[in-house]
Image (cartoon, rainbow, N blue to C red):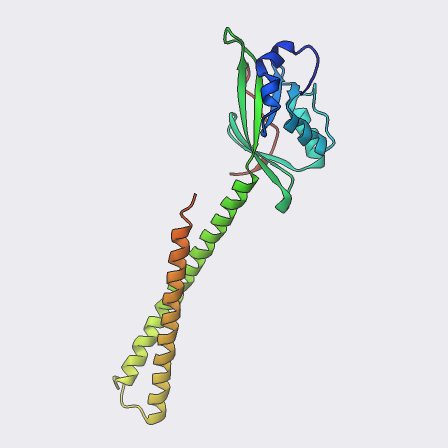
Amino acid sequence: MHQSTDTAEIVNLANPAILDNFQDIAIVLDKQKCIVMLNESGSKMFADHNTQPLGKVIDQALRELALNTKVKMSGTVNQKEIRIGDGPDADFYSMRILPIPTNDEEKIGHMMILRNITLTKKADATIEAERRRSDSLSKLSHDIRTPLSGILGLAEMLELGTFGPLNEKQLKATRQILERSDHLTKLLNELRHIVKSDSDQGNLPNRSVPGMVSLESG
């Protein structure tokens, strides 16, 4: 556990022995929102980006982190999401900021908990992409089916001689239209079945703006 000086009370309340066993990143802040302690996961995250955050206000530490990465945040004050990096190699963290009270309930500092949710975010993105693909295919199927129904109706009327008798070549061409339209209808039905299957399987489990974290005053 890495900690700054003159923070014995906060360190004791934060229980460093427990925090060091967290896989989540734990950042302990004093009343002035300065970083006074990091667990091993937190130290590794900053060290990986050549940043030393101890003793610095959290906003400053994140600004320095942003020099080597692209840090973006979204969410409410108590529940935020952080993206570190950009593109396919970006890491996503959920962030919670919790008060650290003393025994008499006086707020002595805050603890920031960052949990890596990269795999969940990527899974959500995949599901969303599949949903959009299914929606596009469904719309395409509808857009093709509507004029196809009209073509089939006219071809049937031609075959029945509604507009007058057809010669042999005209009748043959009309029947080819009917056969190929019927084949296209079957393909559309298969596409609709695929879209429906994807939609059923998809029932599985804000704006992102640059900025620095805001803490509740206290």
